[in-house]
Length: 414
Image (cartoon, rainbow, N blue to C red; front, side, top):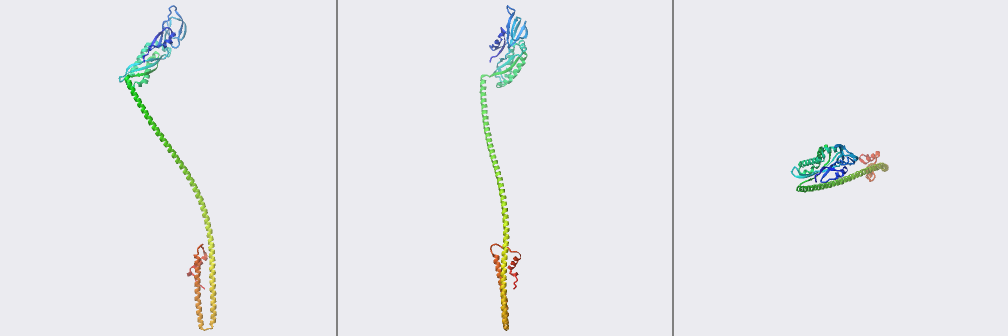
């Protein structure tokens, strides 16, 4: 980068201002144009004067500043009036490289600085710039301030930190230049360090170091990416397992819920079946109870009827046996009486015989009663041992049967 230089040039006519401002050679940037003397040689006036539009136009009358001249055509322009300065309104880019600037560790570096400025914003600022500073002194001011600032910045840091201070230096430089040039109508728009050049060998070493650091950064990023992938994979696996576990738990809960519903249904069904069975059993028990009561009544009736029949039969048999015994006894008595009457005529021998016969008849009657009683007892025994339906006999008849079953309590009478 070459150092720029702002200059003031002469121009023969104001109409050539635009082409003259755009004509930059040898890094010279024209910012002020001075129009040559328009004093006529033959005529004291000029018939026409063209004033260009765009830049600030300053004019003088008899050498005294008259301020701004509006653009347009001026007819009958006398020689004592003249356009003194044409000041550009354009934004100027100024390059100010600084070579062999020592750093804090005594490394020489080259710093390229570029700034942009303009003159303005109004005619008063342009007049202030032209009459108080001028292009030449502005160039000297920019050179000295930028050189001093760059070298001070570079010397404050080591060579590896120079590039890190670009933005901070630009802000500080902008503030410093504005403070020193604002009073002259100069506005510094921007300051930028475009390049910092280190010695070639050092630059190569730093390049290799930077490349190695870049490679390390890439490896770290690759490693971080790999770790992130592993973490993401692990997280995804955990989420999958958690989702599977959640689904399994949900399935288990659903199965548990279905089981509880089925259990309640089974309990309700079992309870219903139990109630039905209970009602059925109660009904069956009631029917069985009623049937048992009926059977009991029927059995008691049949037993009573059977007992009455047996009792009647026994009574009839007993009565018949008694009648037979009495009849036989009467027959025997009759026979004995007949024999007694027959024997009455016999002597005492016949009486003794009759008495013997009478004694024998009494013993025979006792024996027959004894045999009859045992026969009756055998009948009752067989009746009691009879298999099948049991008869229940109560009351006086039952008591009589019990007394008949005990011979010791029976009194045998004729």
